[in-house]
Image (cartoon, rainbow, N blue to C red; front, side, top):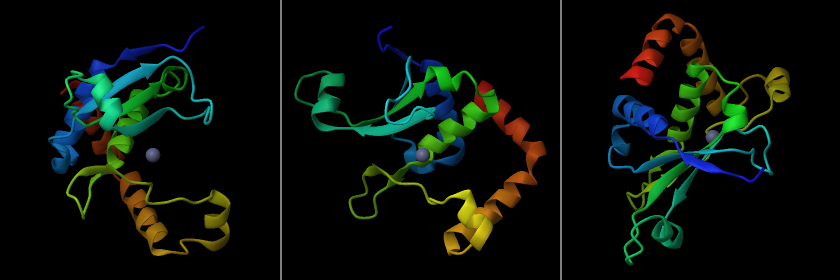
Length: 160
Ligand SMILES: [Zn+2]
């Protein structure tokens, strides 16, 4: 079967709610979400991926009049996405939006890498061996101790 795409407007709505709640600097960001029917060949386990669309690719998407509106595209990998709970799906959308930041030099919205790039084995052997891991560890502790309010948050983000 061919690779197919479909606009995911209901997920765009959830992204808007996540932005309203947690990302005031992204208020002006244009977020487009699409379902893709097949996994990414380079990363079969990936559930979602964000990219910034500008220049020629933005021109192809928009009016094709010479103007191009930059936007952010989130692709949702349907076969992987379907295995997740609603709460996990919201966490993934939040994760993808967290990739967008305001550039300190140009004030434009740009993509950033993950704060933490680490293997479980290394943390097991060496603990929180740098500051980023310490911050991550503390955040994980707070997040895990706050499970009661999470159900309410997820419901609010899903249903408005
Ligand atoms: Zn990511």
